[in-house]
Image (cartoon, rainbow, N blue to C red):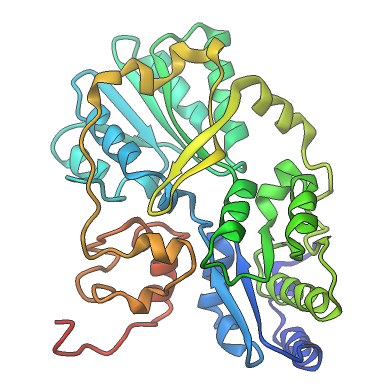
Length: 369
């Protein structure tokens, strides 16, 4: 890649759209499993430019959005404790829990800090030996290696006041759960390019074969997505079900084996609850037993609280792709980026936020006001 503009060329986009129109002979439903891809599709209006019958279903590809409510409540409770410095990426601070968010804890005097890498949190712990420093380790396979490195770095340096609150989730089990659902409408998938840059795509091959569903590893720019959709439609039209790689400039089949080795050393695969979806077997990461001392969930085990979702929020259905943000009565009225009722309106990768920032807001009616 020389220039980013190469992947935003409007003339090439028109050519890909024309080829899509010439290729598609019937309706197809394709899911992108990445919030970054969702934002590009919606912001650029790609989903509205596709040929009639080609429907994009927005999947649970926002790691902030699928972080379980109980984990948000746990984070809020830990951050509010005296003597704790709670660190996190910025997009987690406004995710609503049952009774508040991390930004509210900060406003009330809690020591909540935004960091740009988990290694920053380790350094904070070194400089503040009289405090407990906690890092909120969330995300898909993409962010997990850096968080694993922070655990190893703290252990190597003998930093005993550093721990991580782990809420990592894995993409392949989520795809399987979607395909196993009686309500499933998805016929093809765009796999997240950054996840596959770490893990490769071998985990997707048995899924494609078992469910006879095409999976195309796809990037994040407009032309990436249009080409990924075209590759998926070509497979669907020809009756093929394979894993293909559109994102060849960044992804290889084996992925980043060094990063995978670090993940295997620090984490173990376990069941994980996804916010709005429920528990999915073998869909998350937890710290390996030898790193139990750095597990904030254990270190602050007494801080569990009862959880309750906002009654108006339909985030679970949105995350599963069965409904759109505009189907929600609160969307754009009582639920906005300034006053979010659910995580998909907060995160930079949330579907509700994508729709809202793209101006897709329903007309106000007496019923909604």
